[in-house]
Amino acid sequence: MSEPGVDRANSCYRHPDRESYVLCQRCGRTICGECQTPAPVGVICPECMREQRAAAPRTKPAVITRARSAAGRGAPVVTYSLIGITAFVYLLQWIPGLGVTNALFFSPVFMTGLIPEPWRAITSVFLHSTALIFHILLNMYTLWIFGRLLEPMLGRIRFLALYLISGLAGSVGVVVFAAPNSQVLGASGAIFGLMGAFVVIQRRLGGNATQLYILLAINLAIGFIPGANISWQAHLGGLIGGALVGLVYLETRDRSRRALQIGLLIVLTVALIAIAVVVARWKIGAA
Image 1 (tube, rainbow, N blue to C red):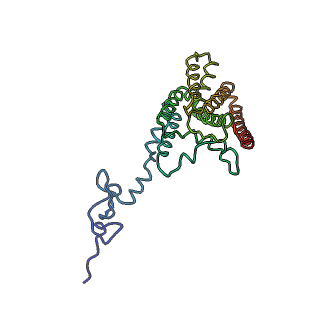
Image 2: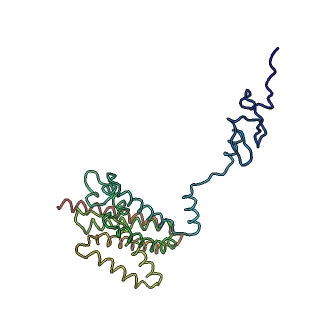
Image 3: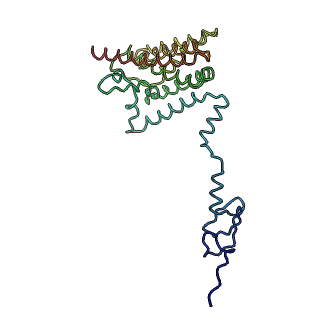
């Protein structure tokens, strides 16, 4: 006599040779222990699990979700991001053998030569002296103050453009006013650019900028103290660059002049790079 066949009602639908009395809570099919996935109530089969995952909403990482939430509330997320990036780079500078400082600092010689590295005029803005922690603390505190004032006023993209162009202008100031072999790093040029733009905007809008003038004068004067090891050249270059960007924003603030605003910012950026290259070549050639 032959053995009776397996009762498929009590067998796993994926493994007919395995007897089971457990049912999928979604489709009701019998599933063995290997095919079971725990659910809030009971278990579900592999096919129902795939369908559930496909229908589930895509979740974003917590950092992105919080950033978008903050942006929706009008928080100065670009300011916070710049501070975060600068702090992260500062931590990388402390790792022995990584060479972050050597790879990103700026010197006028990088604007010329057989293999020019003009991007250092911007990357140096995110570096700070590891020998003096107050260097980064003071710069980031000032960025936090002026960022909260200017970013909501200008908008995120325009504020970021102001910061980066001011940093570039600070490096150009080093090329123009300092020795060809000078080496600089730090966000001071970009910070002074924020101050310069704020002065221009405040003055045009009729605000009282007396206290800001005093703050600017004090910070510029500190750069001339012998032995302070502060690049007043970067401060001056950033201040001028930021003031020019602020003037562009004021004169083209109407929505109908948006294309002109972008064009002027591009022209200013190209002009700064051209000045740096020409002056660097002239100084190095005359040395």
